[in-house]
Length: 287
Image 1 (cartoon, rainbow, N blue to C red):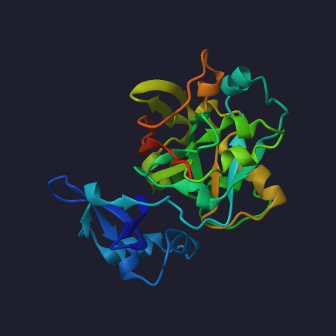
Image 2 (image 1 turned 30 degrees about the vertical axis):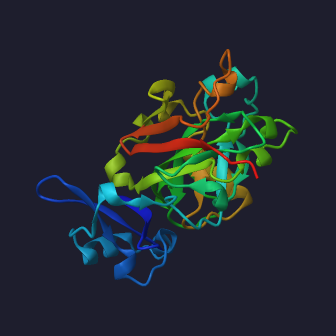
């Protein structure tokens, strides 16, 4: 199934995509039919299957009319894996230490599908990083690789928009990864039963229609199970936590000349079979 967070009549809610007999896709508002206030709460209660059955397939709104929010609006943690494709290690000259490179994002730096990605007024080096996002479904500490998938609720798409000059001012990534409205997350979470082979997911990033990045998930240096094992060693993973698993080679900063995003651009990250995350780019107005 495809579960998403969205705004309806000015109120944050969540639900799932349904398909009518004529093939028209719509959204069932599960939040309006339950006591859960967010998708994270429903995941934590292990209630998605029950909710889907009790809500039925009658859509409350057309998919085309949805105002998307970040797939998980209120995660306790967003952990990002850097330098997790060999091609990206090679183009940056970094990585290869044998352990995942982990940094964090904050929830209020995110935006949903179709919402603007904002180039901050302090920089002209807003870069794209298309990635696969893993969403925790069951809490765990020191998770063993053999048990890893039992802790996963599903996968989504992320664009780890990076303000490169601020990222590189020191050895720490945090400032350049947390400007407001630079973390695209969506359009939804797809559950494991619909994804199929997790090693065959294909990620493609397009800037104004031109392919910038392309790879398959089997090329991850540290795979999903290894990432879960490593992260859960130092922190307890909780339902609704998000792990952004790394970007392929082809980022704008590594190109000659560099390619950065600016007002008027359209950045799209497609992950097959999940879907496409799309965000127009705007420039922050000077104050």
